[in-house]
Image 1 (spheres, rainbow, N blue to C red):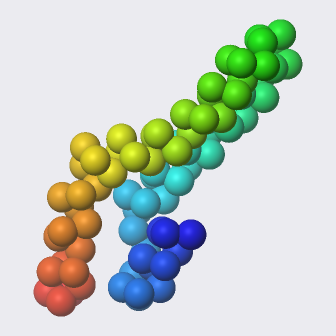
Image 2: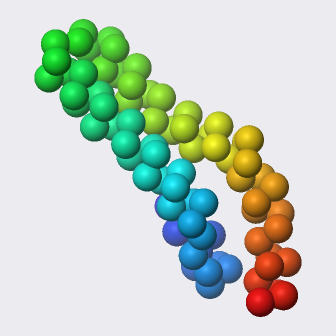
Length: 77
């Protein structure tokens, strides 16, 4: 929802946000695969809990600098 609001407010899509969403959503099927392979419920729930962690780490390592540059890029373009 945050990325959708960001896109609507700036009237521009962002490939970095799509990457973070994709990576976050890729972790969820991994939990299902682990469950199908016989992993315990605790391990599967841990995988589900880590899904938002992907977005947080991505934003804290790269995204905050990218976010700061976006309004300037929109004005220049």
